[in-house]
Image 1 (cartoon, one colour):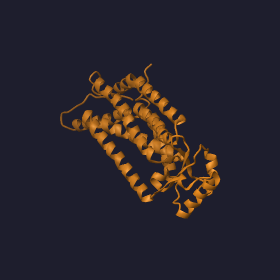
Image 2 (cartoon, rainbow, N blue to C red):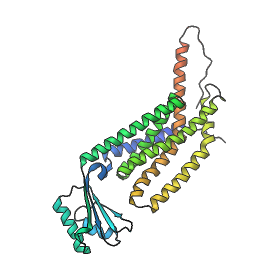
Image 3 (spheres, rainbow, N blue to C red):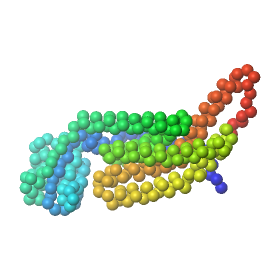
Image 4 (spheres, rainbow, N blue to C red):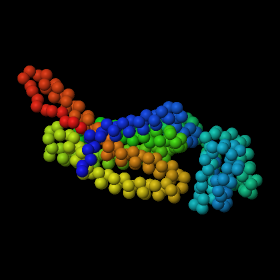
Length: 309
């Protein structure tokens, strides 16, 4: 039995709208948990000379910032990287390193680096990231409009907006730290999602000449069904690889893998349940406006009957 995607389009749209509204609610009330890349702060890198656990490092760092992020560095994972959103003064940084020297008998040369990230730099980075995303979306709209039709492009861009809002909503709800890898993951998800959507749109374009002029319901349902197995298999195999990286990867890899997991799931959902039914709604409305203009002309009649989705 063939599943009727267009018939249940309102349900799919309603699910997405609810998720987006909830995410935006958390976004406006709690905001995003910006990392050092965007908010500014201090990054301290110390060579410990041996492997260690984050618990023993926090015994010292909690005195200065209980929310500091502890990660491993170096090939042997003997370096500790302490990231704090606080702009630590020189005397505070010296006091913290002195505590490490006392606890682990470290030489002065063990302090590899201290980097300060200015909030102004973080703000500029955020601005550039938003501009890059907007530029990518505009280029995609132009490409899809040129390759297909304008309403295909609009439907694709709206589904991409859906994916981005879902990702942002999840990060706002769970208060996951937003950093540079998140922006890279967003751009990656946009490319992945649009590729999956174009596959379905391409099948719609191929099948269009085999269906009635206004038989969008059957056209969309059949086209999605024909590409459904490909979409699911591609998403599952990708998720298996990304999830493995998230489970077994280091902190930097997990920061990149987590938004990819969220984005790929949202992207697969939008490609199957949002983009094509949305194109059907937009195209049907556009055709109706054209017919209404034609019907208003003297002597013009139409035998078109609207289909029930």
